[in-house]
Image (cartoon, rainbow, N blue to C red):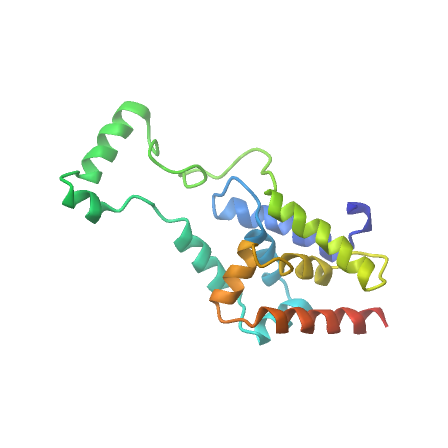
Length: 181
């Protein structure tokens, strides 16, 4: 399938890996593909911007979602001092021992796998290219794949940002149709 990807579509995929590394995540999800698409200066990026999507806003939403799930105030009401627990745990097991996977202090060093939904989004990009009667998979097809399923985090992030996702999908399809002509 990747042999059908144009250079711009390949850059989206490698950019998603860079986004995951920068966020210290140990997976590549649809949110990283969306961020990679937003980081460029293409017709797709401009169309997303016209609909209210921007990289900094999506990155901030993802970062908030990744924050420490332990609530110090709630634990304090139960008589638990999170700072003391963290300090004792790190003394015994090393720095970052209580951090969730992907939230540690270091960036992932090895291969970062795609989540099943990110893989599905990439498969859907091929289906969108075929449906639009196009032989190559471009960045717009990847964007259609990333926005295809309401169960994808990328779609939820876009909707939370106030985007009318069906209208954005329609806009991208129009752009892809005019690019093929």
